Amino acid sequence: MLTDAHIHLIDHPLVQHKLTLMRCKDASTHAFRQLLHELSMLMAYEVTRDMPVQHIEIETPLETMQSPVIDGKKLVLVSILRAGSGILDGMLTVVPGARVGHIGLYRDPHTLEAVEYYFKMPPDMQERDVVLVDPMLATGHSAVAAITRVKALNPRSVKFVCLLTCPEGLAEVRKCHPDVHIYTASIDRALNDHGYILPGLGDAGDRIFGTR
Ligand code: URA
Image 1 (spheres, rainbow, N blue to C red):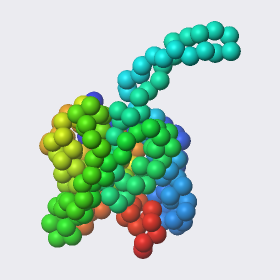
Image 2 (image 1 turned 135 degrees about the vertical axis):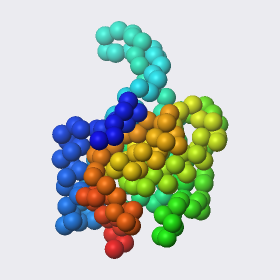
Image 3 (image 1 turned 90 degrees about the horizontal axis):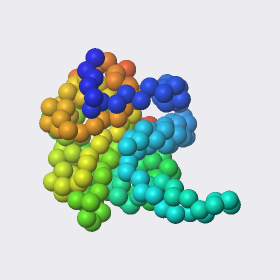
């Protein structure tokens, strides 16, 4: 299995338990969305682990102290539409001060290449840390295109969070963007001929939005 210091496998039992429930084909749209929301909060905990803190003076009931806070405004959560929205909601619950960007990409069904149709980011990106979110890192084409677009704005750092990935997708992102840290709850076996992850969980967008 392909692992290195830039690939963070989130193997916490709570994450793995919820992921198992999401994979089941009989999970309802409501259950799938709720589990994704909970999982995203847990993944936010991991991806923000090294976020810088600043100390502010506060008063406890007993005395004054210097205590750490994070500056959520420096963080930009970038959702790769449309399935990224499922992760975005959960992460915003935990980091409500984060800024939000959106990238609209669809996969050309014949070439499986990413085609951009929307791009909107907050201002002053060079002062911000970007966390790109997309539940499925499959071929890696969308992830590479999204990372390339965001990097052109010179953010301080770029991380990528997905629920599931596979060796092919990881290899593609590692090849094109070796500096980007990838956070995932599972590295599945392989991709099929249609670019779906096996065993996977099916089409994440359809399962979040109930569109199939
Ligand atoms: N996108 C999905 O929604 N599922 C996959 O398995 C691969 C890409």
